[in-house]
Image (cartoon, rainbow, N blue to C red; front, side, top):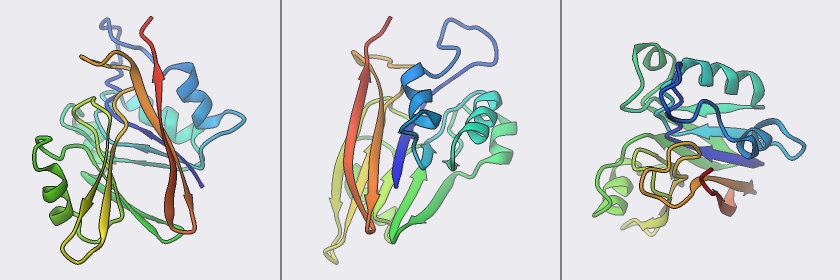
Length: 177
């Protein structure tokens, strides 16, 4: 199963100087020739139009609301989403707090999950939290494909789930301009 992981798209309904749409390579990963089986969006959509477009074009969509999402998005999306993919327990949330202590906090807050996809910082993150019982939680933040903030490139992730294991996690980069 192929996954596309995105967050912090911040797509406005009106032109505000930020991106007006997802980059073409991201749309290709949504519904192109080698499309993802599931798109995961970790919040801060800003635009309901993007939610509708992804819902229409993605084979399957899992998403949560972020701190910049208004009432309409909050009515349609949960704060935390969970899905099981071939035995892999995946959770999605927008905010996880400061980078310092993140693994420990998330291991406690998500004790039954194997993977946590999050956003908010616009900074890509890939780490593993080790729990006292020996289990592990993989933490992934795909960054942002549209609002890179202080990062040199726009980013998103793809991954594969095989036999209940997350595999082939790739961070994709798109330079500005």
